Length: 522
Image 1 (cartoon, helix red, strand yellow):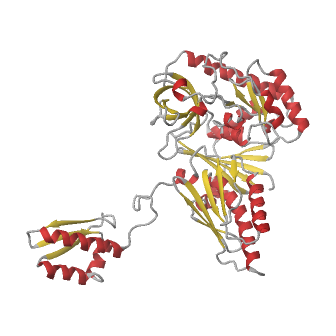
Image 2: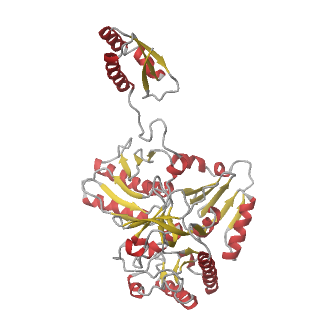
Image 3: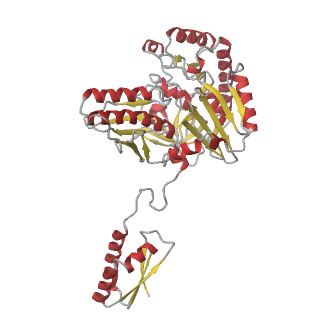
């Protein structure tokens, strides 16, 4: 099959949505029972602390940790319409900006009709906008990631199938991905003539080719939804959830479902019926097959997806040529190293390096999307001597990233062969969702060598023997360390016993961490 597919697995404890492009897994979305994502949720929050030094505030919206609100997300930043669609992952991938000629229209912003405070000039300080105890309507722009709380914005957006409503912005924008000027103009004219006064919209790529009725239905639905949220905000006090986004299966229909998707397959009857109902309301003339999977084999196994998911957790990824890339994720950034590995090429070294780097480009972009790696990314390509080769690799990287729904920024390849880039991060990567820090190495990825541990033990034993009044010291250690002390390091134990005239008794403890040891008196 050459078209795209959505494969949806629903179990008691989690829901998984896989997007396949030409049979290849390119995106995986997971939502566990009791852990539904909060991006896009709208809250009435209470400011608990204003931080002038950071130009930000902590806001209590009822989550485990206070959420973070930057001054830039409180004041008007109409120059970056992509940010205004940030709370919705799919809306943000649309790059919901306009072309340069549209920017002159973006000078009218309304806050009065919604009852919210008017927007302010970006240079206004956070302490002039917010005060402790103040209640403010906010929307989650980024999930809590690691130790960081959720990131909030006061720019509310409500995504629909074809449009994104911006209730506090009097402007109509068009996704950058809609390149046909005639279609851009047609869509903008339809929305302009049907939108309520002072209500803003972003036209998404899903709107291409849609008739006026479909866009009018989206406008009416989103405006009614906003009125419901706004009225609720007037009747409640913080912290309160005003609006939660759709479940992951329906979000997939709204955000991932497009003209390229030829088939949706789901293995749960109740979710299957919900999808049919949702699509019936929003896409009544459906040209896609919606199938209920009833096979004996688990659906992800049937499509070979479990193997691909396991591969997405591996540190090393082999290339077809015999080269490989190594992906290292840290708290601050992700480093990707490209190596020739077993690939020796057929002509000269420069051609071998170029071919490996070009092959790595495709795999890296695929892995970034599949693993949902965001934030700062450093790619260490194999050094290329020729400027033409560097430019070829760079252009290939830019071209591959164009297919990514997440917003990316990329800098030119440096003289050292490094590429610095950023990829918009809204939710945790697959590795953070599917795995946790190793309790044994505490996330370091390594433990001390047995010989190093023995060295530490000898130093501690020497300190203890100098002051210990008794005749026997008992050393509790991991069994592997005990074996090493009895065998290769036995001479060190005997030396300490002779020097201090005391006996050392070694006892192994299977429950001990390999680096753990304890010295006690008998």
